[in-house]
Image (cartoon, rainbow, N blue to C red):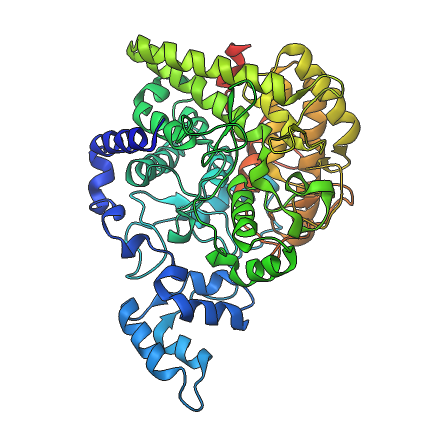
Length: 551
């Protein structure tokens, strides 16, 4: 799709904004200042604050609320900063209101069993963001949103899907529908779902799970929900495929990579090549250590943030240092599997509304993607789906739990699914659940860490391919690990050590966070599939797998 066609699709989508989305006023995209990240609004002032180390966490200042207009604050900055005795800390305190530098923590409740604690967390993690404070980097949403917890006080794209898995049908229908409508609103307003609901996240998205969220809003008839949200599903697809006609061999365009036989697959990307607002100081230091153009380093770091795997050996040649990051050179198996799922959901939704031209178009698209994944990402010799390095024209050879995504979306053939299961069982299954990768690098998306989303991807995918025993083993080991940490600390945390049981995970750019949305959702869902009265006295009804009928 050309850029012009992309804009026309976006315009059509905006024209279809339902009345519930207009409740918070006109799209924020009509206000350039409202959509400008703080790093661009405040320029040298922002760079000075973030580079000074004034805050241990760069996200604190990125989320600050100004006490005046940007022009007023910058005028004060330019007139005062060279004065004798000028204090940057004092200036920031006078001109900005800071959210607490400490993190939000869920109340410790070790006296409750695991699932009762999770059920009690949803009211704490549901937040209203309808009218952000003037000048805030927070984006408005028409309905209450679920936040991960800790330093993450805004809604995040893929986190929200995994959190929703722990919300019970019936009792939580209003919450679930509100979250789906929020993301539909973001697509209608900005043309895509940003990484999170902050202005500094608008230049990138995250793994496209929106169609799976839509399915959760209508558990007994997912296709009816696909039909209802067709404009947004099609617009999200257009976002990921923007520039497919311009992409050529060795010259991808945005998120589209052209391969040697004319096939088109996708990569992670970010439209900006600058330090991330929320990790500004860290990105500057990384670029200095990288010995290559800073803009490319920033782009690759941001693309990894779009992947959600920030950071992992998946993006590092030879699993070396973070300075070697090359995310935009990689055609990832998880992203392309999810886009296959999105294309399938669109096809089914179009069939429900009787749009045969759309059915034919997306049947061709999903068939072409499946064939390209078979050709470039399936490794028959090793029995895994692997990421592909389009620049070097070879698979990366770096095993990760992303190999399970083709099972999750139903695109793997039965024999492929069974072979993947054997490799996962041998190399990624650990005492505390599924490991993220098979190597330890110090990055948080590597060994020994395990993450809740990947446990769900594995369990649903393996169950769909009749690998029930392995699915059960992964789920039960994960639940036991989460429960052991909970009983010791009263908390559910962001990630877990799957080798040394009962230990939270480590690594990353920030301290371990608790709360924690996707751990809560996935753990509640897994306990519903594999109940254990010793740990949980209540269960969440299992989420149906709408893809089970596809293979």
